[in-house]
Length: 249
Image (cartoon, rainbow, N blue to C red; front, side, top):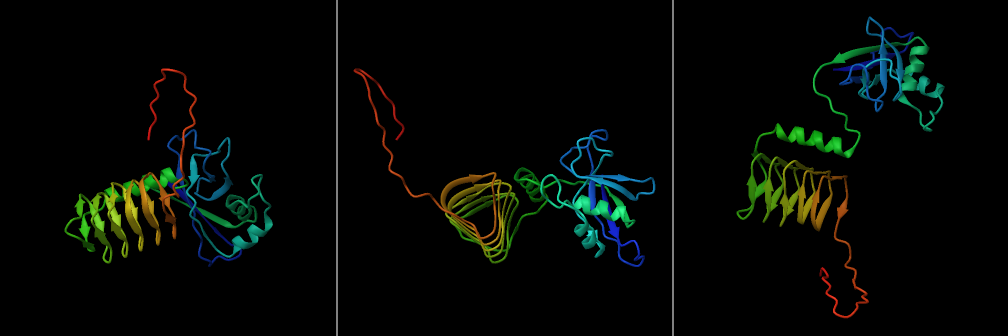
C-alpha cells in the first residue's frame, strides 16, 4: 500500500493540489528507515513528515512522487540544509504544513518497488521484461538466433548474434557478433559488438565493443565500453632445486 501527499498554498483554494506518493512498509510496526515517513490525521491530512527517522511515527513510507503549487518555492527558501548538507524535500513539505498549507494524501494499492540502487533497477527491469510478448519488428539476419520473448524494435539490426529472452533491443541499435542474454534491456541507437551481455540495462547511444562478458550492470547514456590496452606481464621466480611450478598463461 502506498500513500501520496499534496501541498497547496494556504490562501489559494482554487489551486490544483499537488500529490506525492509513499508506500506502506511490509512491517506495520517497523517501517524501514531508508524512506521518509508520513504521519496522517484521521481524515487523511498530512500532519507531519520525517526523513529516514530512526523511530518512525507511522508505517507510511514516502514513495517520492510529489505535485506542488508554486507555494513550494517559498517553503524551500525558508528551510536550512539538513545534517547531510542537503535541502530535504520532506523539510520543505513540513514547512508548508507549519505554514497552514493544505497538504493531502492518497493511498495507492498495488505493487511498488523502490529503484534507489542498481540492484533494484535490475529487479524492476526483470519484472517488466517478464510481462512482455515476443515481437520482431527490426532486422535479424539468417545466421542470428532469437529465442523466447525477444522484442526487436523497428530500425534495430541483429547480425551474427544470439539473443535469448526476455530481452528488448531498441530502435536503431545494432547487435553484431554478440550474445545478449535474459533480462537485458538495450535502449535506442546503441552498438553491441563482439561482446556478451546479460541481466543488464544499457541506455541510449552507448556502445560496448570487444569486452567479453558483462552482467548485472547498469550502463548510462553515451557510454563507451572497450577493452583495456594490453599490458605485458611477467613472473619473477626464485625456485629451489627440484621445484615444480604451475603458472597460468
